[in-house]
Amino acid sequence: MARSRNVLLIVTDQWRGDSLGLLGHPAARTPNLDALARDGVLFRRHFGQSAPCGPARASLLTGLYVMNHRVVANGVPLDARHTNLALEARRGGVDPALIGYTTTIPDPRAVGTQDARFAEIGDVMDGWRVVAHFDEVEFRNWAAWVAHRGHPVPEDPQDLWRPAEGPSGPSAAPARIPTALSDTAWSAEHAVEFLRGTRPGRPWLLHLGFFRPHPPFAAPAPWHEAVAMDSIPPPLRAATAAAEAAQHPLLAHWLSTQKRGSYFQGAEGPMATLTDAEVALARRAYFGLIAELDDAMGRVLAALRAGGQWDDTLIVFTSDHGEQLGDHGLFGKLGWFDQSYHLPLIIRDPDAAAAGARGRVVEAFTESVDLMPTLLDWLGLPVPRACDGLSLRPWLHGATPSAWRDAVHYEYDLRGGWPDPWRMPLGIGVDEAAMAAMRTARWKYVHFAALQPVLYDLEADPQEMRNIAGDPASAGLLAEAAGRMLSWRMAHADRTLTHLSATPRGLADRRVPGGVVAGRGAGGLS
Image 1 (cartoon, rainbow, N blue to C red):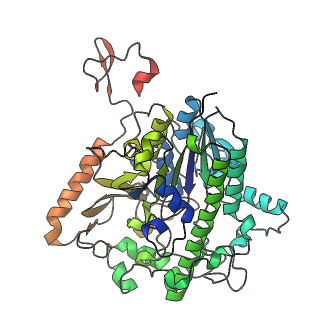
Image 2: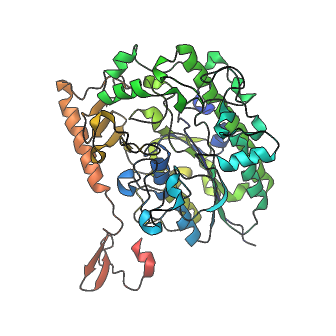
Image 3: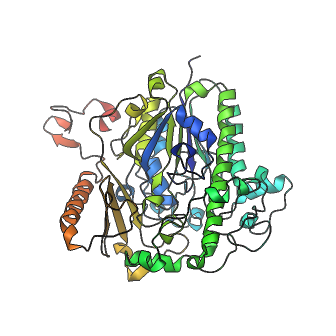
């Protein structure tokens, strides 16, 4: 029997791109991921297309920039006309299975406005075969799994993430939930069961989602103390909150409005009043959750080996978006700083052609939209014309493409999404809430539809501390950056059918001189 080609796509939630031991981070305990990177390729400058989860995952799983799929915030529906990774894999005979979540709201024109999924932050994107769904509001499936194993579950399952002792908030105590019953253990156990149940010759693509290191920032024992306090670097921020806020009115707004309850279950009060010691405890919990996750992924990868599918499976490890973790005075994923969009990406290609590239670290810019075309390319399936991303397969085989992007792009929407879509900062209107960023090695430009821009000279200011958009001496750079962004957006607007044209000879593909699509079937449309 011919061996199948499989894909294990591991998607974590809120994992910063710098947080890997292999990259020298002093607080990242990631031995399993470090080993995977040494046996694969690490993409050091990988960026997501948006934050929070809904828009970020829409880009990852459709291969489209936010300006094309238009899921601009959590709770915004995904247009049913867009295909996705699961649908394309299914068309190619590959079983697209899902453990976790995709944070997808369906198109109301296709399902009606009374669909129960509109009362959730997000459901499962069309095409996936659900093995185990981790719902992100009531955590019903995880809570039932915990209860079935004899552990008491409070009325609000999220209270399992409160400190085991002491008040809610940043704490040195572990979370109330034992490690064996954590949400990370839930994902890992379902993945091991899935891998044990696969059969040779039946290709699969498993989207394995982990909820961590997403807040609440409380790690179960012993992971709560896996990282020594003196190994945790302090946050990157200006000398004072006032100096940080002076960069931009929107940054000032966020610094004054973030709430503790968004990051610590049951906590009250503003984030702005956290002491340095409390920030350090929050960061310790975050890296404890990462250490727990790495350990769980070690069990999953061991199961893949034990099942005899290690040499048949493309392994991808990444995240949807990053986490500020106190940098620039902020927590969460928002705004324009690198910490919210710089992501980890490790790909291990089992093919013999990739042997010479094992352990490679790629410094070129890559993006989340590259994952769908990469996976389809590796599976031998066509990549839809609409995809904005590029296959990373040449990098996996040791090549360095002669023409590659020299910038990354991401968007953030200022209008409120789930659960409060009426929350608008600074009086901005619902159709004026767009923010788009373009980042090169030299500069970062951030454009707002209704606010003043942001510009950094990254060569002189790599930590993004001085917004020079209003500096007359930077007018030339500002014009250059704005012009480049406009040209890029024009070139990458939706192109699903723009390569086709009617001619006297019939439908033609303008990419092929004299080429006519007639008689070529659907394949000529991609």
